[in-house]
Image (tube, rainbow, N blue to C red; front, side):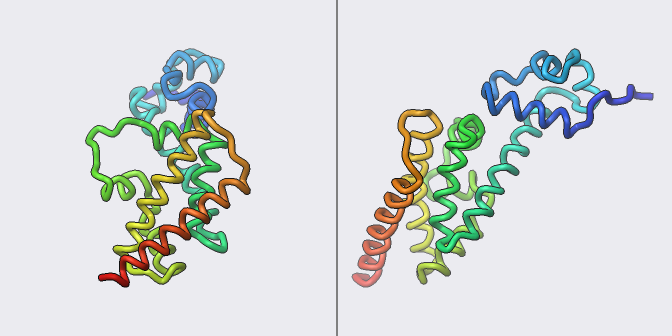
Length: 193
């Protein structure tokens, strides 16, 4: 009979996530996890086969937390702008998790058109919000999404790495200005075709 687990899976994941939030993924070791749980590392391995499983569980927990930000953004008056604001807020609130999810080298480098569907689980929902809110087709919505993601990712990266600080009003204004300019440009190009 296998030994009885001293800690639940949820307790271990919650503790592991706290380690990553404060010290980054590189600090998540079996020894550190055991120490934070107040035991040796052994009880961790009555629940998980190895540290790879723990790391995967932490990634999923980080994604779940990020999805809450996206969900909140999608309820904003302007859902696409709301998602952008929440993306940046996530980088401010959870800089280590933001770095883990959005600043980690990819095993294979996707081209620009493939990066958003790869990293954003809510891609289709966000894309539909753009089409509905701005009255543009899917191709133009994808173009707008890519451009504004590059812009918001830049702001979020500056925040997550503490290179720069912005107020919520500054971020809102910057996103509105860029989105308005891009929409105008996209619609003019569409009319020229």
